[in-house]
Image 1 (cartoon, one colour):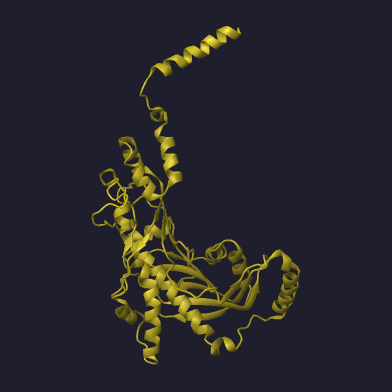
Image 2 (tube, helix red, strand yellow; image 1 turned 180 degrees about the horizontal axis):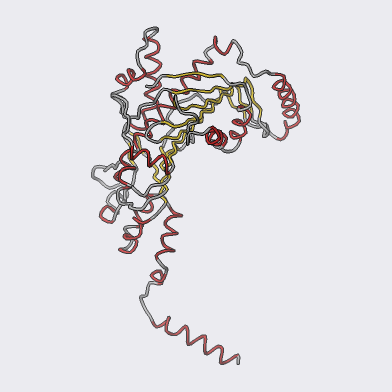
Length: 382
């Protein structure tokens, strides 16, 4: 029995050994290859894969998931002065405010002056064209050009090389916005200073300080101190808010051609390498984006921001469970005027959006700030 079993096994192996030059990868079904490509996701790598063989070239356009990292930025701030008129007339202190807005817009518009996705192997005819340190002019491609050969994308993630809003070291600024044809909801988390968790050797001192801080916060009524208005605290939050909204509106405008050319899209996220901000669009938002005309801001490559209601919550000091301390912690929730909730028009959906906007310790910070006293503000469209 043992000998006959061994002969039987050898008989199975002989035909495989006799076949020379056979590519065993051809035996892998297309569905499994597509699964691998979807896990790969990176548009640059997928472009290179499409140059490997005719089979890969026919399968790459069918991927459901794609991630495009824009790795080169050419600054073009020539229109920054014209963009200053977008916020409407400012009769008082125009000179100082214009200077402030100009500096802010230069930082916000920088990532969008020119976007180069850096894909040098987007198709078979371009593979290897820009390799090594060879001569010839570098050819740049817009995100829409890079993605034009992907015909079945459902989930798209794009990443900018830098954050949109410049901040000083130690300053916390995170935002997440949902857009349809225009802004639907936005949440901003900020802090003037973030002190990370102490080293293990100082754990006891940190725990004591945390207890004292919690006691202070427990006695706090949640009111904003008078100094917040006099020392520039409110002004700083306004700058954060306007900068984040401009950043989201600029990203939204960048997507117009991509959404138009990819009818299969169901989810889009446009973020940055530093994780400062995220623009998100789901199936309903993408459908609205296609069906309703885009309201572009005059003289600027961004979507017009509608008049909004804002809810501001503030804590002079917020200490999280991991020991992280956020000074001047601020939570701003924004929705357009006239909408009951924001996402889906419901209060519950908006609350869930705010609670899930950020991960890690910042999720805890949002939860803590959501329990603070709420201050209502209004902002005109721009």
